[in-house]
Image (tube, rainbow, N blue to C red):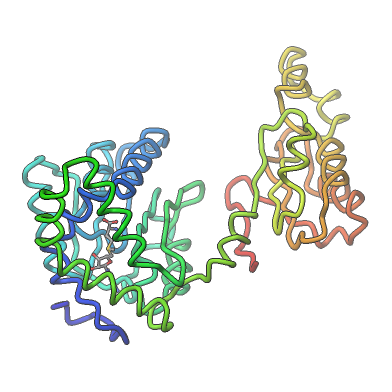
Length: 340
Ligand SMILES: C[S@@+](CC[C@H](N)C(=O)[O-])C[C@H]1O[C@@H](n2cnc3c(N)ncnc32)[C@H](O)[C@@H]1O
């Protein structure tokens, strides 16, 4: 990296040289294309306003920031990467597409700071592991995020089997464009393969921040359930043995029945395709195998038809635990980090 502010990192991965072939690898990797497609779909579903700021850290050659700038032309997209070479490629794409709303900044995510509550979306794709202190960057990201904003992040876990990954790309590229063309592309991208092996070694040796795959299982088992209407046996089976559960406690039945909503709306909310009442959420919780459960958060509470203490009491009753153990997700601020 040529930036003076780059924090020292105990790995020998050279992102500058990776830049020249990054998009060749991206192009022939079906998983990369699929992820980028999923991101575009996600972008299409967001509700943003003109002037909203979308940030990506470790944005590379801009395959995600360009997608964001194209999807939301009235928003400002901030692309941050520490490598001038990666950024040069992103600038070429910006120029080719005439994207006036894409700012490309050469900066180190480990020292970057942005104003609190300033970003509506923060993205980090396969970049967190490379930061010197990823948890600190993640904490800052959540400070930059405005209430109701979103984070779209994904990262490899450790250990990373680089050989298996290369074989997967090679085989699928052979199917798409034949062995000869694939071999030519792999030869062109041979430095990327070298850097990928270094990344694999750095993840394995603890030089890079990497979740162990077992930890990812815990992450996957952190489940969020809202707009459920009613529970079923299948839902109970799927939620059993979860480590963490964010569970809809939309309303208190009495408050909804006595409240000011019109009859048709009350019927929809209370019906099988509506929302879970505190009592229904408690009944669902009581039916689960909670042997691994370490966190429960009551979420999606109606401001008009519920109160946090009612939701808390219902869930604590189902678990036979102290009410203070039940977390509440605030409509505007969500809830704090939980350790799994
Ligand atoms: C694997 S690439 C991912 C690029 C992009 N997110 C994508 O998926 O196409 C990782 C990127 O992180 C950048 N990077 C590594 N350490 C960084 C740091 N401390 N601050 C900012 N960017 C960093 C590298 O330059 C590289 O462009």
